[in-house]
Image 1 (spheres, rainbow, N blue to C red):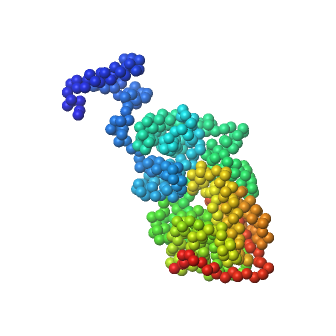
Image 2: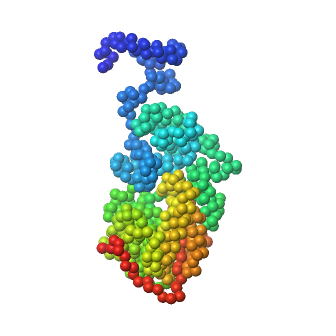
Image 3: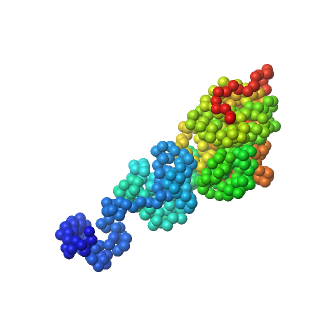
Amino acid sequence: MSDARRGPGHGQGRDDRRDDRRDDRRGGRRDDRPSGGRDDKGRERSGSRGQGGPRRGWSDSRPSERGRRSTPSRQVAFEGLRLVREDDSYANLVLPRLLRSARVSGRDAAFTTELFYGSLRAQGRLDAILAACVDRPLADVDPALVDVLRLGAYQLLDMTVAPHAATSETVALARSQVGAGAASFANAVLRRVGAKTREEWIDEVAPDREKDPTGHLAVVHSHPRWVVRALTDALAGHGRSRDEIDELLAAQNAAPAVSLVMRPGLTDLDELIDNGASAGRLSVFAASWPAGDPGGMDVVKDGRVAVQDEGSQLAALALALGADDLVRGDDAHWLDLCAGPGGKAALLGGLTVGHDADLLAVELQPHRTELVDRSVATLREAGCEITTLTADGTTIGAEMPGRFSRVLADVPCSGLGALRRRPESRWRRTPADIGQLSTLQRTLLGSALDAAADGGVVAYVTCSPHLAETRLVVADVLKGRDDVEELDARDAVRAGVLPAAQSTLDLGDGPAVQLWPHVHGTDAMYICLLRKNPADSSSDSSAPDVEGTPSS
């Protein structure tokens, strides 16, 4: 009911009593304030619209405040962070689904993508800044509210969002997703965050580089300390300078370009260019997508094209194309030992046709075997002989010894080389994970070598440059065998590289190849080629009898 309809003096006594109580609590300060903050009806205006300072009389229970919601873009980013935190979801898998579900597209989708991924990448730095702006340990703050604060701080410090919009929209997000009290808390914290630039905050919260170089880099580039140390050691261990660590960490925080892979024989670059793509930079099967989700293209929907980093493509091509002159003997049976989710298996499978070979793709988890089946379905329809099998890769060598001329062991790893795409991995992994993974990696590589035929070639691949997952695994496995030699992988990798990129491609001193984000613009893939020496006596290397999902 409006004031006019209530009539003169309606509710006046009750309002006076409320005002008296406020005066008692505030020590009579209302009488001391000028009347300039009141409108012509004597109502006090909020501080932000009147005399400045904090709003008085604000209530989160007002209908106008209860109904306030943030934008769909920010809600999607928040929901993505929640799923990553609570369900251990992969960032690169959860975001496209959320965007489609919320019907966020175009510029709004681009904004959401930057906000979501950027907040994940910058989490360490943002938390150091937020910790300086709250009156309690950040671990004691509601995790959902911390997610909201990270989104707001990232907008204030790293994006071109107007400060008032970044703050007000984040406060609205806190109110709708966490609660009214959280909104007030978020408002106070973000005002402190916005009082300084990112550079000023870094100067304040980052350790001195001279006294604590690892700690300094951990805050500046938002990586855990142990990851900074591991990557610095990896640079040196793979023949590069430790001084490149700033460039590497910065590259790990840069949003990667969207790389497409053409399934062999099913499409060509001209068709992709007609759909808005451009030529790739390195791989002969690559194309570049300008921005956003290419999933709407027909060539993607029907399985002739997929999203795949060019480093991953080169790893598969080093075996599929580069090992042609390295394999000795029959070359009819290929194996992908850890095939899920199927990107490399599809490249291998598509290239079996030119070698009159078949491919067995092994995956431990049934749901990931289904992903492999989807990845190779169109290739099967085109006539490629690809069989999938749900089985333990660590036992394949014992179950099918000496059967395969080419074996890809793209083993489970820490993912420290793919932090551009999965920035959440840096916050999930711990040093203890490396020890557990390296044990599994040794076992899988041993199984791959056992499964290889005499004269067969094994590609040991990781998406991590960590020395304990790369060189040390290979050295340890070779130490216990006298039937394996390491090959120079550089020419094999070059077999999958575009002619225009050959002259400028730095593949190091060999024999293994370590790709780097700051050097090659790819994920940090490690590619090592090993050949199993012929045994003294002949062995049966006939085709395996496999009960799996055969090619159609």
